[in-house]
Image 1: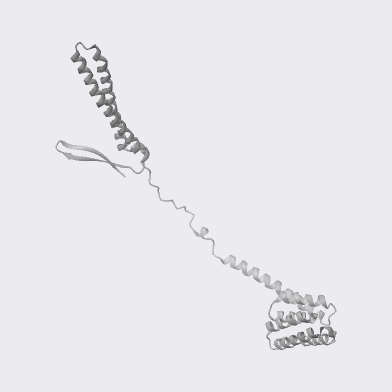
Image 2 (image 1 turned 180 degrees about the vertical axis):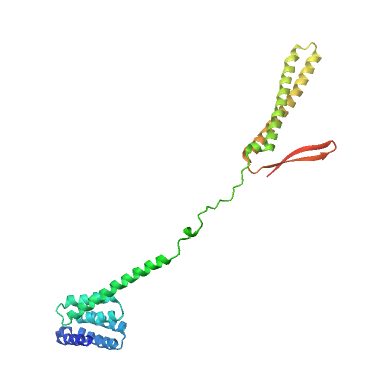
Length: 255
């Protein structure tokens, strides 16, 4: 079949008008070389040669030769495309029936190839291992228990500071009250020395009272800070410390 097509191609090249002599000369040289390569089984090189010849001189029979090369290379879809192009250009070609038979055969082969590919994919999917999630046991894994935060109201050091501050502040307030009473009693003292003594005592109590109120306030503020600002990091401890009078309970804290 390829020899008959080659003969037809040579006839077309010979009978073409002289206006395309240069193109025909180059196309014929490419055609001759491609034919030799086809006969040697070098179908890829022959296909390139027939394509180059067609670019120089678009004779329809070169499409058939190129389709033959593609079929030999098992490029079935490409071969069908070129066979159809050939029939479209030469619908009454002498080998038209043979070309149609080749097209039908190639299309059947492509259909079988597609079915085989789908079956292979289905078999591969069926034999593939299940996803990792499905292979893991269904029993849930319990997370590690989170450390329980220390409750702020269970911080003895904070409460000790607050309590001490309240007591000290209350004592200071009591002294301030006594100082005010002494100052009010001074004008009613029976003697001048008694009035001066009341004023001196009022001044002393007032000074000590203010100091105690300040110390109590500072202690209470420190206790609130311990309770509010460091509830989870402050660690307290209690211990019995031996002493000359027996044992003494001590409280302490650390970060």
